[in-house]
Length: 592
Image (cartoon, rainbow, N blue to C red):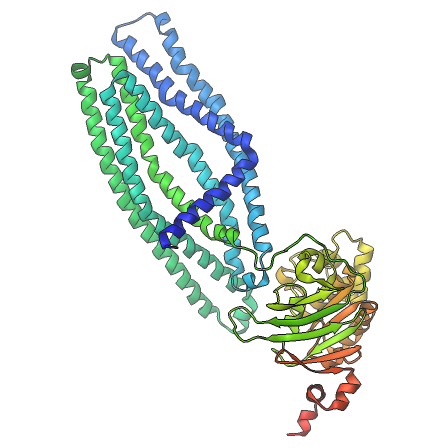
C-alpha cells in the first residue's frame, strides 16, 4: 500500500468511527441537519430579501409607515425565529451530540486499548496511549462542530445564493458559481499541502506527551540517579520537534491564506463592477441589486471560513489518526469462542508447548511438558531468563503458545474466554502495581462487592492489618499512583490480600514475597500456606526458602526442566537446585 493510500484509508476509517458514533443517535443527527437548513435559509435568503424590499420602498419615496408593515415583518420575524428558537435548539442538540458521541468514542477507545495484549502495551508509552485515547472524542467534537457551524452552512449558502441569484440575474449567478468552484479547487489543492504538516504536528505532540508521562512516572529513578538534566534535554528535544512542526504548519497556512485572499479580492472587484453596471446591463431594480449584493457579500464572507474548516479537518484527522489505527488493530490475543472455563479438579497441563517471544527467533520453550495435579503445590525455580515467569504468562494467556497447548481440566485455554480463565486464577505478580485508590478498594478489586468484614479478614491473613491500622485513614487511605505511598513489602501484602479475597481454585505466585524482609516473610508464609490449601498452586521464587516445603519443585534452565522433586530429594541429587541452594545459604563464601 502506498503512503497516500494509507493516509486516505486513515481518513476513511476516521469517518467510519465518527459515523458509527453519530448513528447511535440518529434522531438528534437528523434534527441538527434540518435546523441548519432552516437557519441558513432564513439568514441567507429571507432576511436579505426583507432588507432589500425595505430599501426598495425607501428608494420609491414611500413615507407611509403602514406600507412598511409587511417588509418589516419579513425582515424582523424570521430573524427572531432564527435567534430565539432555531439557533438555540441547534446549540442544545450540538452539545448533546458532543456529550453522547464523545462518551461513545471514549468507551470505544478505552475498550480497544484495555483489551489489547501485554505485548501491545509493552511496546508503547502509556502516556502516548492516554493522549491518543483522549484526542479521539475531541477530534470528533471538533470535526462535527466544524460541519455543523461551518461546512454544511457554507454548502447551503453556496446553493441558496447561486439558485436565488439565478432567478433574478443569471449572469450574476454564474459569477458566484464560478467563484465558488475556483475557491474550492484552490482550497482542496492547499488542503493536501497542509494535511501532512498537521499530522506531523499531532504526532509530535503525542510523543511530547509520552516523554512527559514517562519521566513523571519514573520520577524516583530520575531523582535517585540525578538524571533531571538528562530528562530535561530529552524533553527539550521533544518540544523542539513540536515547535518545528508548529512553525511548518504556520508557513503552509500563510501560503494557503494568501492564495485564498487573491481569489476573494478578484471576485469582490468583479461583483462590485457588476453591481455598478446592474441597472445599465440587466435593468435591475434597486431592491434586487441590494438583494444580490447581500447574497454575494454573504457568500464571500462565508467562503473565507473554508480556511478554518480545512485547518480544523486536518487537525481533527491528525489527532484521531493514532487511535483509529489502534481501533483497527486485531487483538493479538483474542477469544475464539464464548465458551467459559469449567473447573472440576483444577489440573493444569503444559503439553508439547513451544514458544518464542515476539521478534526473537530462538525458542524459549520447545516441546515443553509439565503437569500440575489437582491441589498440588509446585515451585518453579531457576536462574533469571530460564522461563519461570513466561510460563505463568502463557497460563494466563498474556501471550499464546506457538504450538502445543495448555489445558485446565482437559480444556485448551485457547478455546475458552480469557475472562473466565483469569477469573479462576488468583495471580500475584512480581511487580505489584496498585491503583491510586483506597487500600480497601485495592484489596476488593478481585471482588468489588465484598463486605468490609471480608476485606479486613483477607488483610489479616496477608499480615497487612497491622500496618493498615497505623495509616492516617486506615483502609480508606489512598495509596498513590502505582502504590507509591506504601513500601514494597506493604504493596505486596495488599496484593496478597487481594488474591486471598479472590478465593480462586488456581493460585499463581510470582515472587510474591520478594519485597518482604525475613520477619515479614515468616509471618506471611503461614498465610500463603493456608491460602494454598485445596488449591492448585504454582509458586515462582528466587528465594528458595519460599518453595522448600512445597509438594514438588521444578528446576528450569534455558526453557527446559533439568530437575524436579521435593526439596530433600533435590538436595541429595547435588544438581542444579543444590547449587542454587548452596549459593543462597552462604556456601559460596567458604569457597573464596
